[in-house]
Image 1: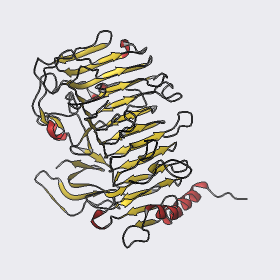
Image 2: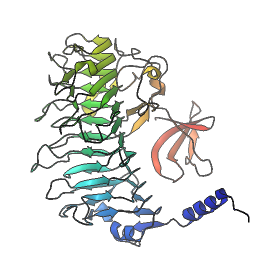
Image 3: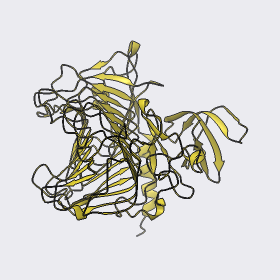
Image 4: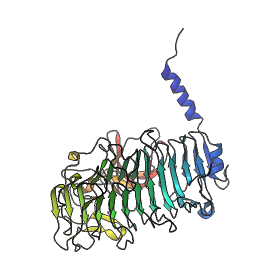
Amino acid sequence: MSILPIFPVLFVLSFFTLAFSAALEVGPGKTYSRIESAYASANSGDTILVYPKAANAAYDSVAVYLTKRKLLIRGVLPGGRVVLDGTGYDYSGVGSVPRAMFQFNQGADSCVVENFEIFGCQNSSYNGAAFRINQVNDITIRNCDIHNNDMGLMSNGTVTDNSAADQLVENCIVHENGNTADPGYNHNFYMGGMSVTIRGCNVYGATTGHDIKSRAHLTIVEGCRVHDCQNREFDLVDDNGVTTVAGSHALLSGCVIVKAQNASGNKTVIHFGQDGGYDHDGTLYVVHCTIVTPYISPVVDLSAPSAGVSFTNTIVTVPSGTQSGQVLVNARNGAVMTNAAGRYMWMSSGFSAPAGGTFDHISIGAAGIVPKFTNAAVGDYSLADSEAGIVDAGLDYASITLPQSLAGRQPVAFQVPLGFFNRIFVGNPDIGAYEWKNGPNGVRNSVRTFKPDYKTFTVGKGVVDARGRMVAGNKYLLNQNRIAAGCLFEKSGKNMIWLKN
């Protein structure tokens, strides 16, 4: 008896799975008038395309309880986002009623939602959210504007089940979420589970809680602008069976972090430790960040016995340069200062390396001196001038030691007003979130590489400029997503190089 080889069988199954995936359309004149009805008809692997109503009027009371995997739900509005309004709907979480506009439940792994503006999600528990990731993996939220909900995004999972792993929130604006009826407990982000990455996002102005609160085993925030919260910008705290597992780290990389000048609540910038009585067995790594705070409250507050912090290539400054007695790291609640370290930092004169930690290659600015930023008023904290102790003063990126769970990541920086770009170094990097534009890395600061499939990759109509770069209208990948406009490209081997205009 002959046995059929397994690989051709798998290929045939994959072919038929792709061949029979469908695109379901929602909107005026389309097959479906609501996202929920399209979802009811969808199969795993399908795409739901949501077109705007006239004048981009909002779809109201949207509530999608997802249990199907590999769905793509995309708003289709070139240059904008399709509006979804939850006002008046009770996102109760009772039975099959979701606690969020999009709630991903068991079975809904590997889904993507993109290109929506979402607001008005509330409930009587004050934790109605735009998105909730409930113990499922590989969920991506991209290019959404999330505001004025009880919560922006929520998630939960465990290390034992490896659930809520590989969450990705990318290129989103998340702002002004919170509920004054429950002050201090509503946040822009409230994440948990195995691992979450927040990349290229503008996160600001949580009205009653924190900008980013996370109880996840691994929290990675890279190339983001996090600012102007009424409480902490980051509250990275404990969860029994999650942060008590060794290696419960957090990485803040390439971020601009700015405290509000008029913060009414907790003025600490970053809290790493506990608020529930359990340990936090890991280290907060702050790499190539620019941190601005006018307060004497700690930049990092450690509050668990196994919690630590490590700064590298980071600027810590004040807006005026004249504040005194500022605290870089505080240790309490069983935390110890010997778990604090920093290398290759520039700090304004009000700061000093804390006693008990391990700090070296620290530059302290003269009184009244702050780095010159290009346009801080609009959030552009790129360097506007060569600064002693900052430009070419950093540790080579390849020499920065990170645990395996965080290592090997391409360093990125926030792209004003939204998004991120790869940061590539030539020689010693500059300290902080950006390279000085006139330095040796400046012209390569915006390079981003990818490997397209040439059978489906297009760049639109374009011309070649004086430097031999192709000026393209759009950039597309396999699924024909438009992810950039007005970009410059040039070929390098099998890669296309994307350079900022």
